[in-house]
Length: 416
Image (cartoon, rainbow, N blue to C red; front, side, top):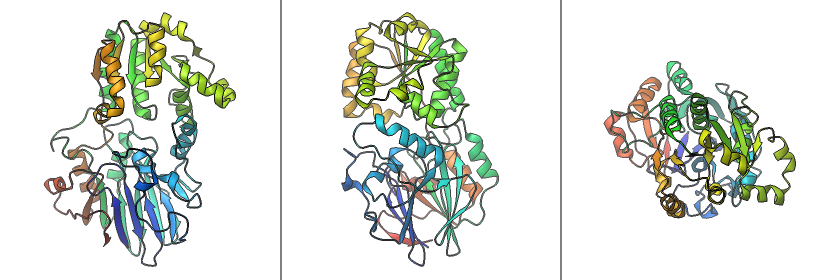
């Protein structure tokens, strides 16, 4: 069995790995858009034969989880290539697509992962493991072929709301791993002994701010970070606040298929449709979609009257509504995403808006990735013969944590 990291050996984002069996059959693990890509352009596709559907030796593309830097280039490949991923992750991407700008990727049909249930794909035996990550329905993958065993960690952590999944894998790991393709997003960001706040600690921090805010609380996070939405909701309940969401968020939450996750018809949740989204609904005639989520709908006047007891899951499309309704007095803004996004040029307008209205800002966030100490625990549990870095800007840091590291550059095929 041969492996080629097409992107990711010294880069976070844009992950893509090709696995080739001795008989020439191939699979691709993730097909992500690079984080520094200026647009979702075909030019970023890795040089893998058969992505146009012309080579039947390419059996499928496997997507570990629904983050753009792992699936974003699917729209540029043939729809005849099966895409295998988690059922709920697939549903989220499908339901979210109409709300996105440009041509949002909708994955082609293929098998759905079922955790710890192996399946065969030509010469490959593949076993997915549901794992803790900020992306919903995320998996690590065990790939077996030609008497060799490759374990692809995907993106994972041990401090989220699904930490037990990672701990379960570590307690009962697959045996005799030849290669561990191990993500290292946090190397170089944290000292080797440092750890991240847990999602429960994030909930505590949010609840403290909610209790102290006298105006509308704005929490800027991704609706697809389901763990964070749950933390925000739980903090709202603890402080007697109403969580206000938009239709996009309602659709994403519904798409998880998990009735234990907050939904638009829960009594502690209100649905507010910002003006830009109302236009989108009319233009696309999404009236049946809207009808499904109407139970707790409020309008701008309602939001103004309950602003001091509400938390808005904020998106930039709310800006003009909040200005026009004079809802920014005593407002408080919480940024709950990776700080790297905050500094991007495309967010300059939004940063200026915060400054213009003198809205206090605080960051409350935790990583979707394992700390260096947890990476070490994970590797010790799986006990691979070799560890190969991926999804990291600091591959050289691995040698500070592990004594069986093998560095492999992008675009180079190597033997397992």
